[in-house]
Image 1 (cartoon, rainbow, N blue to C red):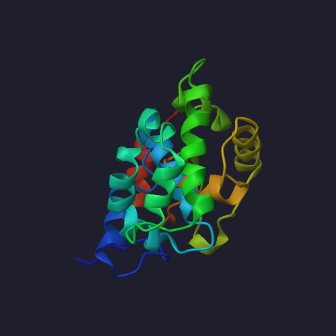
Image 2 (image 1 turned 135 degrees about the horizontal axis):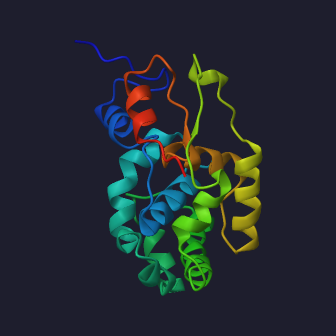
Length: 193
């Protein structure tokens, strides 16, 4: 039986697994949300499949995105990571992950990162009904508000388009095409607030 997926999914098994098991499913774990936000920031100017294939190397390089360990990274760590062929060797993007960890720790002194992130959709999933993935927007008022708040809190590589891709990925928005096999599944998993 052939499974109908969203039109952006290629034949790559890594992409298919990501689409089928991760994309659009609500995530509430603060550290997982932090990791996903950092990975989405790495995508700037690149394809998502590139980041997916490098995700294990990123996880290893950045201590499984443990914010405490990442925030403690030094200039020497940055220099070492600049030679790591498994990740995106952009000084700005490497420094952004470290800066984001520091911003995360400061922000979470007063609230959970999950509560902070989910406030932009009133703690529920926005369920869309797109016939075709190309109709979905690349940013929304919610992603613009999230980007503004994250930047104010000291986060980097968190523009409104990156924030919208992040919202899609972590199930704050269900943008599976309505004829995709996983649309109904993610609708059932959608957070209702």
